Image 1 (tube, rainbow, N blue to C red):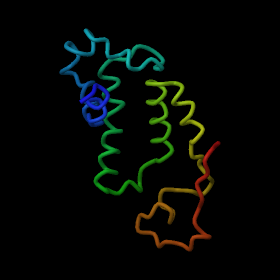
Image 2 (image 1 turned 90 degrees about the vertical axis):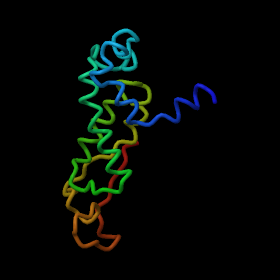
Image 3 (image 1 turned 60 degrees about the vertical axis):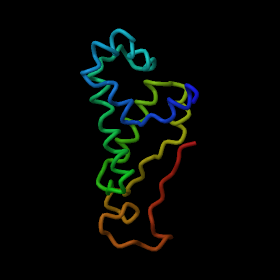
Image 4 (image 1 turned 45 degrees about the vertical axis):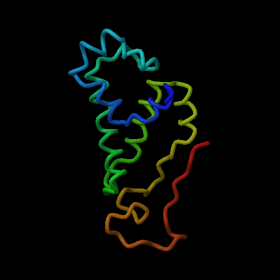
Length: 133
């Protein structure tokens, strides 16, 4: 097994757990794990990174377990995910920014597009999400 294969098999939760307080003195400081975030506005503490990443892990778990995410603020989630990408790799964030979904007037998490018990409208009536290119 190669180094790349080992890294690829590690879960998202593993990477988030590396920012837990229990690794502060053994990994974060001595191995300078803060350098994994070269695009951050300043040197971040393990607690700041952990508090920022935990909601992403929770969102990922909800999606993976097919739990409803209809009531979430999609645009806020999108902004925070793009910020996390920027912290790790500004060039990747620039690419991802071009794929950003723009909010549209009247498009709310309770609209038929998002479910929430609302009746599904005809395809022509569904609100459209538009990508910024």
